[in-house]
Each structure stands twice: as structure tokens, then as C-alpha cells.
Image (cartoon, rainbow, N blue to C red; front, top):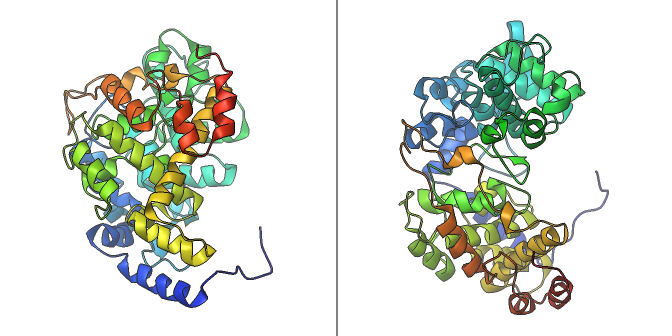
Length: 424
């Protein structure tokens, strides 16, 4: 979409001043790493904590594979230039160029793509990941869901649940480059096994049966992003309660555990204290941290701000920016309240669609401990986290927004609407 007129702001002079101020404030080690290596830098370090999923989430460690796909390797081999969204000084986007068998030039893979087409399917060939990423871009496919569907198929093949004949003659052994690329094409074109896998791992497992449901990694039918909740426990309840399923962009709760979330605001200080900052294997406080992370994300996404920049901004800064642009006197408290209102509206919508607290769960695979890696032997206590999360939100033990909470948020009509629904 293109417009022909300029977007007016309430206070142009203050807006220009604020833009310069925010641009220069986007600095520090994390931002520098993003600029130098892109989000692929997470591959270089994520294996240490066990954050990078391996072999359809069965393993907790594959150092060699991660390093072969990291931002440093990309910069040394195929990176042509860095890109940025308009006006952003970070420039985290990659532009890559490949020669030979996988000849292509275009956007390079981000962390999520590197993990889903890399360790998740036991592939350590960077050029294969780039080729798969290019296919997904051209077909309009989500790389997390596509890589996850291929990993699911490879495990089903390994277990004998999916035969070579059912896979149209493809050898779905782990890491097989030809199979990875061919299945991506089939999913994009809706042909062969891709017709089934393109519906997602939930429906694919329902069709295959024979115990495949146990390794279909999804929440509410959507595949899980490439951050392991066994490595950062706050992501367990964050994923389980996501309105559209597991989603790190609708609440990056692990930022509290890594120290990336700002602490300038009182609400944030309280959340960090209850979350146990940098104590990633605690369960206490993670429900409250997830609640606040989701509220912040709802605001940041509504403002159409990059999550990397937005999650670093104190709530008061977000409110000040909104006030300058719109002319309305926003406060930090009002901004957080808006985020909470958005999340409650999403919950109400899902309840009207027939979802319940029974959908607030993690797949079995993510509650099984691994024997190696940065989270070996550890799993989150999701039940404890959910109880804390519902309480922090002012919802019932069944995960339903209480009428008084909805009225407090100015959602009188929603409260009346939900009161007529059968809680069961």
C-alpha cells in the first residue's frame, strides 16, 4: 500500500527531537551484536543455555551445528550487505549472495529461520537454510511453521509412522538437504506430502495418528517459536496463554531473565523482582512477568515499533512518544492499561470462539527433560505458572476474565457479552 500525503504529527518539532534522541539511545552490547551479526547472533550463543531447539526439540545441545549457522559464519561467507528499516541505526537485516548449487541473492535468514531449518531438522548447511528461506519468501510461507512441519515429518519417518512411499519416495532422514528443500516446495505448492504438512503439525498428527501427537510441537494449533521454555521458564506460561498460540512476538518474557527489559518503571521493577531476574529456572514470578511482557508487546505491536527497540524503551518513553505524535496526554500507567485491555479483548474473542483454559498448555515434548545442554534435566512447572498468571490478570481459576476486571478496563459491553457464555 502506498499513500500520497504526509502523515501529520501533533508536535513536529518535538517529534524530530525525540526521533534523534531515540536513535542515539539505541546502543549497547546487545544492539551492537545485532548490527554486526543480525539476529543470527543468537545461534552463536543460544546453544550455551539450551535455547536453540535440536532434532524436533528432543535434544538440548548441538554446538557444532549452531556455530556453522551463526551470524559470524554468515558474515565471513555469504553476507553481501546489511539492511535496515527506514531510519533505524541498528541495521540488523542481512542481504546474502550464494553461488553454485544454491545460487540466489536476497534477504538472509533470521534466527528463527536458521534454527527451524537448521538444528531443528539436524541440518548444519548454511546455504541450504538460505535456499529454504528464499523459497518460503517466494511462496509466502512462515519459516517457523514450515521448518517445524518438516521436523515433525522427519521424526515420524524415523519412528516408522511415515513410510518412504507415503513421502513420495523422499528420504526423510534427519538433515537431508534434498528432502528439506523438496518438502518446502511441496508445502508451498500444496502437492504430495506438502498438502498434509502445510496444514500444520496439529492436523498432520491427527491424520497420521499412531502416537505422532506426542511429538507434534504446537500450542493452539500453531507451531512453537525457536526459543525453548525449558531454557527460560517464563516462556512456558507465555507460550501456553498466547492468544494465537505460542508466540514470542506477543510477549518476550525471557527478556526479564536475560536482563534486556528496562527497570525504570515501578511496574517493571516489581515484575523483575517477582520474576527473579536472571534466575531462569525459577517458576515463581514467571506468571506475573509473562503478563507484563504480553501487555507491553500489545502496545509495541499496536504502535508498529520494532520489538528490539520497543522492549528496551521504558513505559514512560512509549507514553511520551505517543503523546507527541497523537496530541493526546498519555501516561505510562495509561499505556500499560491499554496493553492489558488488548490482551483481555483477545481472550474474550477466543472464549467466544469456544477456546477454554484447556488450550492453555504446552505440547508433551516441551515438558520432557533432555539429557544434555544448558537445561538438562529441567522442565517448568506450568500449573504453578498458570495459577499465578490468572491471578495476576484478575481472571478466574478457569482463565476467564472476571466481570469486575473487564469493567475496570472500560470493557462493559464485553463483560455483559461474556456473562451469557457457559463457563464449560
